[in-house]
Image 1 (tube, rainbow, N blue to C red):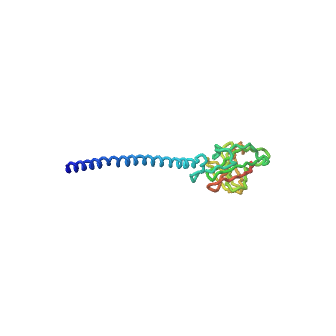
Image 2: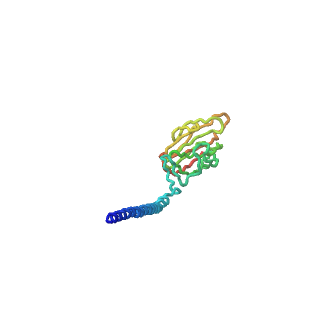
Image 3: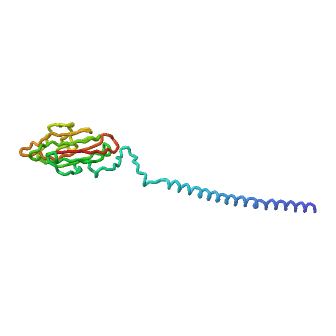
Length: 219
């Protein structure tokens, strides 16, 4: 009787221990899953505002500063571009060699890599003297190139300025402003006059920066 009671008590104890294990494990597993889901939700909701703050701080439309060292500045007041070569030179009104028909022009060059070319037709009028002249008071380089209307162009001398040649091979004279350019040339073709296309070039001496200028000229 006592042995049977002991066996019964031992069996009950074993059953009680066996029944407690699931009760202890299930809450822990469920609590771990719930806390993991809660942590993940918290991280996501915490990152989302940070992402929006970073994106809203980048303004691509207004970030127009040039990164390249050789980028040209945008100069207010510069004339229509391109006018960086003789073929694209800005055309001025025709004048004759009576100096009173001369004129002036203004512009802005954007560094040494932005030459400005200007062009007029000069007419050799009876009673006046052909002496293509240009002058500036600004710190730019000023050149005058000549192309005779008939035949080749003969550069006799630079009465003011230094002899030079344009990229296209036209003879002319240059000065570093403030300064003057005065060209002495002829069109040696027999029977021709000294009518000529005159091209003036202005460029900056510094590598960068906007340089305004004014040039007065006559033929």
